Length: 119
Image 1 (cartoon, rainbow, N blue to C red):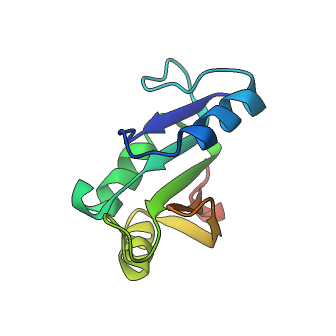
Image 2 (cartoon, one colour):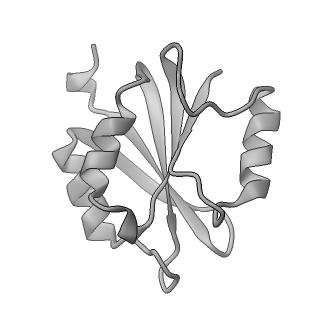
């Protein structure tokens, strides 16, 4: 499995990154040489428009791949409003699933291509 990581910064959850690398038995890649199975997208409110980031995440994602959008939890610096995520996902032509709490600082949203948009 190939997982691309975008939006890394010093505030990310390193233990989560390590767990993912252990699970896939490989390093996370920044520049993909082939289609990736998943994109791990660390995103904060100050990073800009989430829709643009999601569209950019599709560049190397396989047609059946998943985007994991990781954002700071409510009340923390960089928190991205739920409505902004939902609007960004819709604008990008993707489908949002339920959020997952990762730790005290980060939550994740699983985002996939719509079945109608898969090729």
